[in-house]
Image (tube, rainbow, N blue to C red; front, side):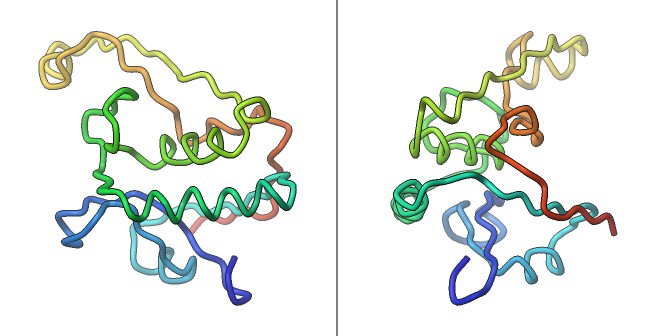
Length: 143
């Protein structure tokens, strides 16, 4: 939130935008300009110092060359997908408070195994935070 407006930090395919994949848009524009079919607004229980640290972490990430992580790997530096970005920011704020365990799924399709060059997909799903008591849903809307 800035200037009484809600913003969304997300990872996009930077080749479409010609810049870093970390993009910060007004929430209204993000919903209108992308293929959003469901939108939820969640409250995170943060102290004031955690909130300030979150802003700093995101500002620091904006300076990095972030790329969309098409491989969905957790160990490839500044290649991130959206929920991985969220986990990275939250754990930078407070590692003890924001503990998330990645999901592991066996890839059974040999074509996908060949493309991804592995048999196990380890990732943070989009709803990784649902079981964490520091989050509460304020509103949820489907288009």
